[in-house]
Image 1 (cartoon, rainbow, N blue to C red):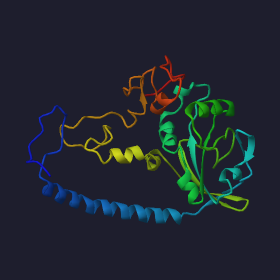
Image 2 (cartoon, rainbow, N blue to C red):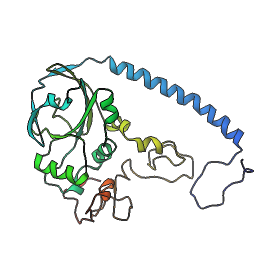
Image 3 (tube, rainbow, N blue to C red):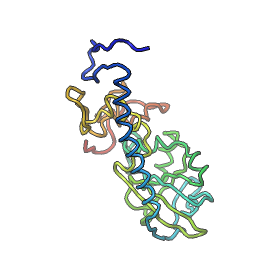
Image 4 (cartoon, rainbow, N blue to C red):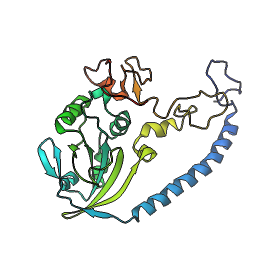
Length: 259
């Protein structure tokens, strides 16, 4: 049952026009044509991605985990494919001073059972010293495999903030794909859901109708204070950290912050 279209009288800043269900369905069906085309183009890009060449490297190079140094090949856990998230690290920074963007990505990858079921392993690597990394992983409650790649050459220990894919053929290892920036959004289901809502991500760069909330920087919501207000202030933390036992406001991020 639908009601007769009338404009809302609330105080929301900007809102879609109110129409009857049939009018809404016609507009929705028109947009669906574009959405399907977008999906098919994504499939075509994935097909091209599968046809990229690959680069062999020394899979015996050692990384450091909870059991000490292990060869990189161990990260495959016996499977043929591996996805790594390369987590940025700030030496000596307290937990709240670590990278909020990487926290966003890794928090959305807390469980890899569906990757495992497809024969793909997942792990997180970072350039931090293992003693610092281990403390951070424990605080965050992460259960994914984490490793330090401090001093390890590319393509394992190069630039952080990337999602990188590898293929194993016996005792040989190959780099197949890597992405960063907005390429990392694929793991962030929250952004995909926000893109479906009237107000979107709440970011200033988005194309919005006139009168919509202005929005903030692309990473405005990555950090908040203890009351949940988005802020880059010195008492802020990456948002998921407030769910961790013992998290309290801090007076410093532990490093100079450019935001």
